[in-house]
Length: 214
Image (cartoon, rainbow, N blue to C red; front, side):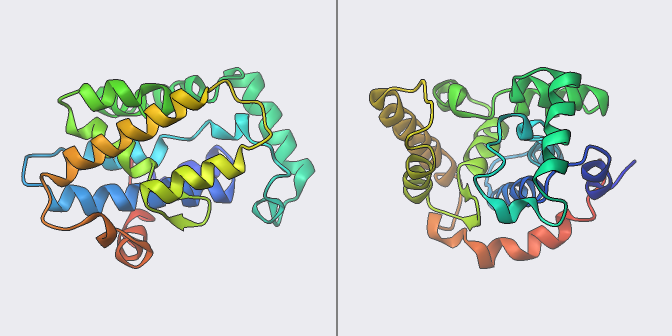
C-alpha cells in the first residue's frame, strides 16, 4: 500500500490539485462521521482523494501563477502534455484510467465516475449517499479553501467568465438547484449545520488524510 502523498508524487500531481483533493476528502470525512445512516467511509475517503487525478489536463496553467511554484510553467506544461499523451484529452476519463491503474476497489470507481457537473441531477435522484457525499464535498471547495454552495457557484461564475463554456444559463441555474437539493438530502441525516463545515473544522481531517494509505 502507498500513502496518498506517494501516489501524488508518482503521478506528478500539481500542488493546488493535491490540496483540493485533500480538502474535499476532509469535508467528506466530517460528513461521514456525523451521518445517522451507515456509510462506507473508507470508500468515500479513497474516492475523494483520487477524484481529480487527471484534472491537470483541463487546466489553464497560467490562470493561477502561484500554483505553479516552485517548478514553473514549462515544467507543468510538460506534465500536462504527458497526461494527454497517456490518457487522452478528457480529464474525467483520465482520472478513471488512473484509478484502474491503481487497482482501486469498484466502490471507489463507482463514486468517482459520477463526481462532477454533468452528473449532478443523476446524483440528486440516486439513493446512494456515498455518491451524494463525494459530489457535495467537491462542491464545497474553492481554489483556496472551504466555501458555501452559493459562494462556490459565484466563484465558478467569475473564474470561467469569458472562457469557452458549453453550459447555458438555464443549465447553470438547474445545476445549482440540484446541488442544493443534494445538500438538503445529506443534512437531513446530520446533527450540525452547513456553516459548521469550514476551514477550521476540516483542518484536523486534512492532517489525517496526509498519511492515508490507498
